[in-house]
Each structure stands twice: as structure tokens, then as C-alpha cells.
Length: 162
Image (cartoon, rainbow, N blue to C red; front, top):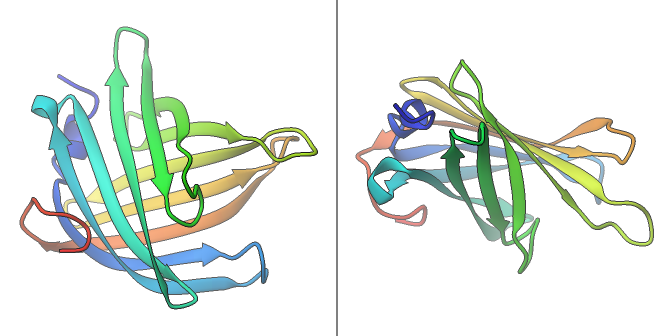
């Protein structure tokens, strides 16, 4: 049985809210958010597509999640129109016993050392899904960056903008 099976059971449409802890203003910014979680390639991958807004401008993102049980790791490739622009952040970690996907990646922050990014995808019950992201300093200190909370909105399929 794949470590992603529990997360795959949350496939479908989701509606909720996104809270960005805005690094520019130092204040949280809340917006409505939708998400679609789908399985790909016979359940070998799960993809979470989502949208949200920043200062009234629509943003989009996607998390492609895979599990490599022979290597004991989970991979996530993250794209987001605001956070990542035209880059991809590759993250590795694990699917926890709880079913949470917990991964980390890093990004360049010139002229200083690289910073880290932590993403936790938490399917908390059949009707709730949470995505939490932390910015991680070079010293390993985590700062909350994004909190998204979703409730089921309908059947599986489609895209986040449907």
C-alpha cells in the first residue's frame, strides 16, 4: 500500500481560506482559496492545485507529491505564482504515520546563505485539509509563512479555477 493512499482519499474539490504572513508588511493577509486534489498515474502521485489572492490579485500554485518507499522518502515539487515566480522548489521528507506530508526544500537568498522552506499537508479528517508553510532561516528557525484551511466543496476532478 502506498504511503500516499491516505492523502489520495482526500481527492476532490476544496474551498477555504489562505492566510499569508506577508513578509513585506509584517501583517497577515487573508483571502478566499480553492483547491483540487487529484491522483495521477494510477495513484503513484497526488497533485494539489490551489488558488488564493494577494492584495486583490489572483495567485495560483501546485504541489506534485510522490513517494519513493524504497528510499524512504516523499518528494514534493512546488510551484506558486507569487512565492516561486518561474522557479520550482524541490522538497523531500516523509509521509508521517498520521498521513501528514512533511517536506523541506531550500532556496537561494543572495548575498547570504540559502534559506529553507517547510511544507506540511495535513488531511485532518474526511472533510478538512490543511496546508501550512514555514520559512526557515539559515540557523534553522521557522517562521509561519502560509496557513491554508479547506473544507470539502464537491466531487473530484477539474482544476482549482473551475
